[in-house]
Image (spheres, one colour):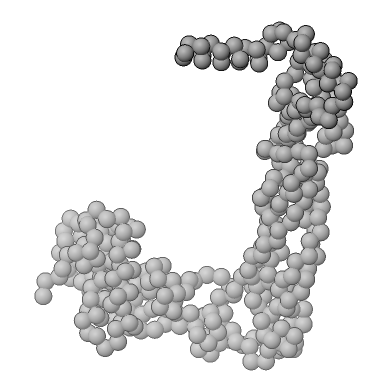
Length: 377
């Protein structure tokens, strides 16, 4: 029976990249895998055909030879190719399946200290004030977490005893299952990939090698942090299972809204109300700053509401830098309220003596309105 074209077997075009090959192989191999089709000879034949096609097309050198010579490139079984399935074929196919499927068929990735499970990473939300973000601080946090059991030193075995080598996998943490002409390695079901079993578990931690406890930690919050800044404390997360490395602790900072300042990056913004008279005649005002001092600003006569004044270098420090942002002060002119009779009389007098020079914006605006509607009529 003539062999089908490998690209046809995988259902891809000749120019398909590695990602497309892997995706096509994964989809088809899962459909006809022998574990999902027990006793189905056609599924097994199809599965072998897929393996053969993928082994060639996923290897750049073999693929180049196949593209040039077709199936003739591997006739005679030279080089352990598909025509002969050399002695390394089972091992290479095991690697292919582990890389693509992971734990789908009970595999699991190699690596780590004989399957030791690293501790989980933890998250802690810490809220600080804008003043604390300006100065920086050392915060104390209490984190409930799993720590290494002191009774068994994290081994999970009763004090005085030790874990024993797993008899199922011989301490390798993996077992090999033969399926036809190839073999697939899987995580050992007895020891869970650790290579050891505990016959007499520690009574304190029940064999897990860790116990729950609230830990108190100091966190250095540098000056200039922003809302959402993340601080990583390596190795301060959950302890790993039976002596495995601990995870990390991530501190996520939130900054409380301030009653006077708003912030944009390293710049600070505030609004300062001034009286109508002060805006008209001009005045000096003092604005408190986050460093505990104050900044003095000259408000020139005739200042309009919304006018913004910039004070360089009085904003927030830039994180891990010597630079500092600026402070922006916006003047808000306040309209007088609850006037007395005398105040009304004075304002009416002032209005009578006003001219276009006194209020150029309003005079110009109403003049334009008059011209517009006059022209329209």
